[in-house]
Length: 205
Image (cartoon, rainbow, N blue to C red):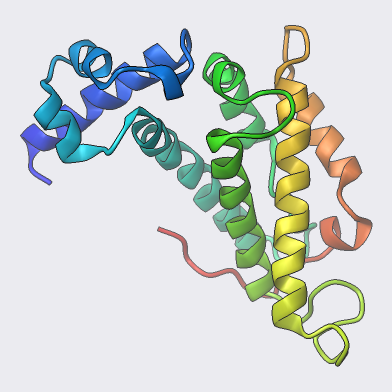
């Protein structure tokens, strides 16, 4: 992507994040987002199909960077607890973007933004599981619980539970304290998961 295109995308991301603090993105006209970004509709559609897709594109790099940093730190201390898919850095991101999430993520944990967070957290779980010899209690040798199935079940169970808890927490009264959320989710996660230490972690870009 050339510098001009990068600047256009950056302007679009700033615009959608600003508008998402005030309005339901699903109801936002493309023309309004384009106007806020200082572009036309054709340019908008060159980069995103709709405002919802654009919002996810603006949020994704922030969460991906947090995950990459967490995995790098976890790999540097392999004997420490593993599997915290929502650590303090994620909680700080949620607080910093709380108006975006409050406006577009209802307390019942449904909708496009909830699906986005669940997918992100599920991928984090899958990365940890791929780096471990085992899975949940019972291990991969349990013929009644094959590893591929249990990994998929575990990823969805933990990811959707975390997203639901986040949705409720985000709608609680201010001030929101990142340590409260990360601590709450740490206590809610199964003991066998939070105490698991991955043997190695793949590099994430």
